[in-house]
Length: 140
Image (cartoon, rainbow, N blue to C red; front, side, top):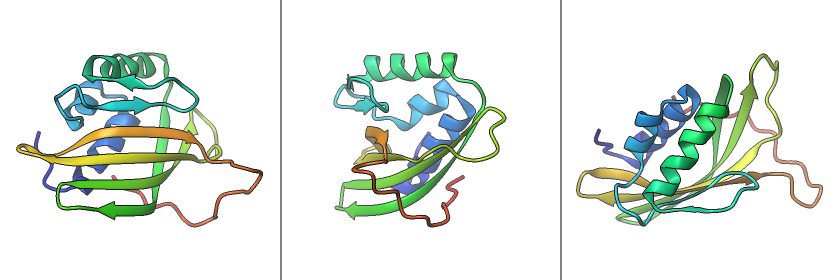
């Protein structure tokens, strides 16, 4: 699978995340060991094998959920893009989203297109200041 833009890679990442599709998820990530993933309140997963094991474990344990993503900030260079997003998750039969998760996604332009090299997610609530209430942008 080839992603011609970082936005296409990000849309595929969140579609795989929501679908709990392990193969689609790993297709978004760069194929080398320079990748890292930090799930909320968890230790860093460094390298492709650790990142893959983390997603496999999460998908096996997770129930059904929906996710909407709101882009909060973006930084662009010729071969790298950093996107800071708010993830709004609805789990199972819940009627509304849980408190947002703040995530940093770093994409690198490789010879085979744009690939994810870092996903770092953490709870957004910091210092008692609630997040801005803007409508989420759905990426898929």
